[in-house]
Length: 116
Image 1: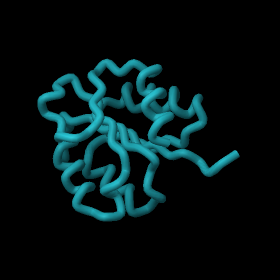
Image 2 (image 1 turned 30 degrees about the vertical axis):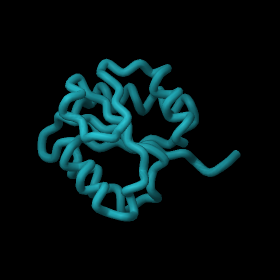
Image 3 (image 1 turned 45 degrees about the vertical axis):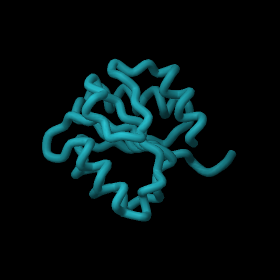
């Protein structure tokens, strides 16, 4: 089998992180999780860039918009595809793929298949 496909899930809701991790691991992905943008930024330098990031927008400590802007400013991560999962798409950065919450796992898996 090929190299592991790693997904980083950044969401402040533990239930969402856990359910996404379970669903994605069942499909063969390696899944890392972070509770906010600051936690995600701390993890990135310690790992090979993920094949995709699933990013919530509304989070405490560091929201998804600030995380995305910081990530885009770093050439190591600027090309990592981001799927924004949010209940308020108007807050999402322009140019990202948006999936409205609640996420449909089948749609998410279809999108990830194209990215990873």
